[in-house]
Length: 153
Image (cartoon, rainbow, N blue to C red; front, side):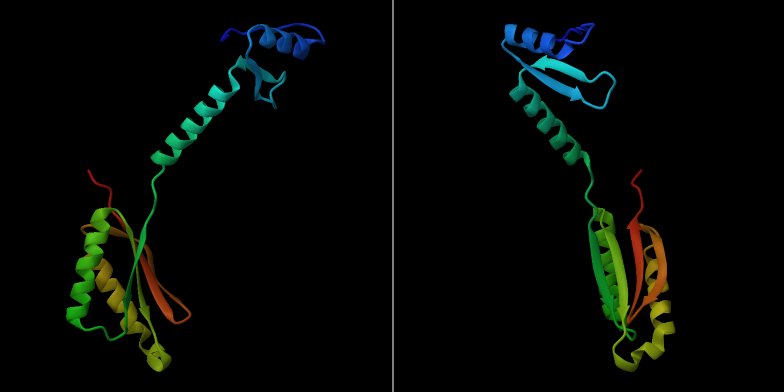
């Protein structure tokens, strides 16, 4: 077990199966696409357990990206703006991305310049804790901006 066994000739698989039977273990194909295919004599249940464990470790190391949304109107008041700014600051410090958008209802789409100014002011205020990932962009009745957190030193 653990040593490489190269059996010349046509009967490689039969010899490997016989050897696995002698050791009362399983013949596990590790790399079927290799030339010749790579097999290992091991306990199959232990092999599956180790694979699951590796997958779980990789999944735990992968970072999950959280996107928090903040909604504005084109004529958002200063108090509401400051309140939402504090929330966005906290979200960025926690490591979440912030998607801020101005929603235009009915004829308020005429004030899309106001919405853009509002979002740029918002991004400028969050410059210390986050960086702009995407500048304000009008999509239908929404103007959105994405801000991602700055890397901690």
